[in-house]
Length: 179
Ligand SMILES: Nc1ncnc2c1ncn2[C@@H]1O[C@H](COP(=O)(O)OP(=O)(O)O)[C@@H](O)[C@H]1O
Ligand SMILES: O=C(O)C1=C[C@@H](OP(=O)(O)O)[C@@H](O)[C@H](O)C1
Ligand SMILES: [Mg+2]
Image (cartoon, rainbow, N blue to C red):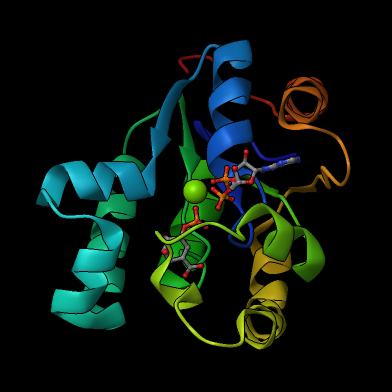
């Protein structure tokens, strides 16, 4: 078990990191922080606008700086963006400073949940399935590398998934005394 001051959710777009994470944080008495929302608040620009102005590289630089800053704190549940595991430095910090939960999602689930979404720049492509499959192949090993726990919501709705995940985490995560 990993005695770590924070809880971090990783996984692909549409896995439920933001929506399930918010509910798990409430159940476990953690401060909920969604990294994308935090970046948007800090920059005053939406994620698509950051991608448009600074490219994915600029977004990743901001994302890494934010994560490093947040992970200095404790008692937080961080819902990361799907690409937060790409940088080795991010993965190392997550391992050091968090109990990490991987929420997987199949490409079919992603396509269904995100069919009307226009806020994810990586999905602004003609062939969303191909893009999601390529991302899954590249990132799947990275999610598994950092994860202390894999929890698959599958057909559970957001509320049930949060209830079950909170119970699993409460049983497994040894929080430091001060957290
Ligand atoms: N287990 C689930 N069952 C049904 N819908 C879900 C589930 N997880 C997420 N969703 C829906 O999918 C969409 C994307 O979820 P979100 O929490 O933003 O994912 P992420 O932050 O991982 O990209 C939201 O509309 C959310 O309600
Ligand atoms: O997978 C990715 O690279 C991204 C996922 C998004 O977050 P969610 O995983 O919360 O959708 C957001 O950070 C950005 O659009 C890039
Ligand atoms: Mg999210």
